[in-house]
Image (cartoon, rainbow, N blue to C red; front, top):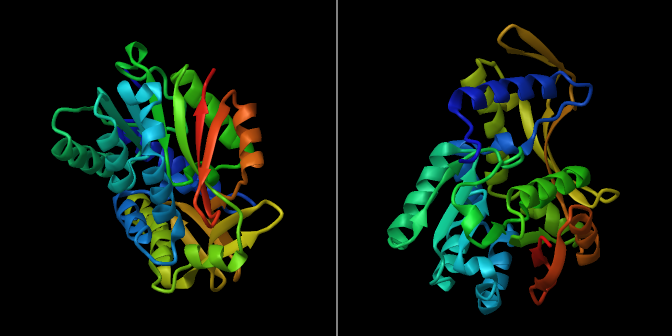
Length: 315
């Protein structure tokens, strides 16, 4: 069986990483902690916004290339989805793979994972659905049932862009180790005009701001902290040198926040760096894939060149 993250361990990891990140010289928190139950639902709302182009653009690419993906060996075996995200993308692929035996979503949010798995079971009652509650950024180990089946990894939503380049290489290596011989369909966001990017990550309706600020609410709720959400503001910045959008929570004043017995000092204008979203062209991502032992078989994009969906194989 795969490594399952029990609730007590996940709680301990959350406390440890939050305290480490907020007591560092440059305060930063892994973006994976944005996705509790509330955060996961807020992100689903973000994907419906006009300003947020990635979801609908990736969906259009997947629709256009379904026949090609259905010819991959894993389409007749097991599909492993990393992050149980948009049911529209998942259902699109599952509906095009009539010979698929197993669907295995892997997600850190147990409740969100259960909801996603239940939706798939209702839509595809004859499909074996095996949800795995785990942090896929950690070594996955051997996943259940997969040694006997060809595997297709579905990694949509440009989630790979949330990682530093070295971390992305390490993650792809870990996936290849857990699922040797697999193929992968991976969504990758492309570089584009700064204004388009900033609008996508700082929408006028304030949904992305609520998503980012929910991290502080989660820390208050789960760790007994006393963050004043009104004393922080969401920021989305384009870092051209790193080809990435950065999300931050900026302190609007000098303040002290307490997490249990730990006091954390903020000066006005200081930020908590909560997420990166790297943007790759095909050549840049092919280098990441090559360094991690994957080979790019194909790359598909939309007519406007906003987004790419790449097909990889692990030789």
